[in-house]
Image 1 (cartoon, helix red, strand yellow):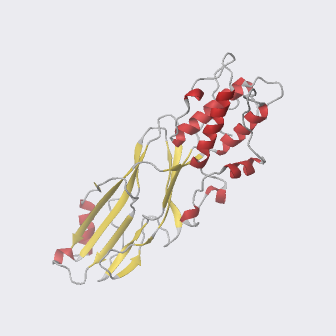
Image 2 (spheres, helix red, strand yellow):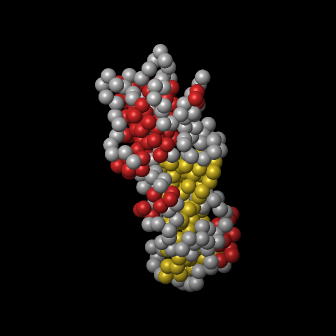
Image 3 (cartoon, one colour):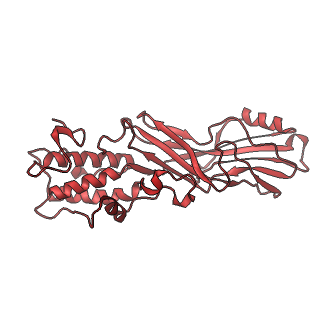
Length: 309
């Protein structure tokens, strides 16, 4: 019988004494493989073939497994921190990565069970891997991305807003240098021409989410904004009508449950409208999330990881 979940072929956790361990090893291998795929880590060749009664785990297999878990740990988010919801937290505290010490504390273990020569897989080792892998369920995201901009000018604020809507999001070169998410509106005191009295512009990041077809996941992006000011001086007023976050307050910009449709683009600030209030003369209104954006993918959703408990 094919192993497709933690309970395939009558497997139970904790492992019953005397049970053949090879099916449990195969379940662990498959659980490790899906976590590697989610984190963008290549599964070692030694772990790429199924375990069977005729191909049981070796010491080298177990050592490769332990080393791969070591590599995965910092790629996964400690979802138990702040209950997995960082609204209102400092942006630097959002989605901290797991550490080995944190994982061991979470499962109530004093130390790692590691494979030893001539004892490639023991029930105690397998049971601990099961506990550890079940805690690896949310990945930090740092996908390729493109920065885009759009903007407009006008003699009136309504004209500038219309020019913004008529414009299109255009890639900023070079792509993928720094996250961008900002918008601003300003009114010049002494414009060069009447048509340049009001100026509106925005920049955004478009993530290229690379995940393969076959596994559902949820994308969550947190941000913290401050007042946006250009280099011309003047008064800066915080105005953020798109996400509704107070200045210097962390909150969710996107929380999107996705199907396993394969690679796709996910834009921040997916809008054609400039919603910032009309600025007074000499005033710049707007916001800038660019210094504080953290993104993650959650794999413990319906249709997500097959090996999850």
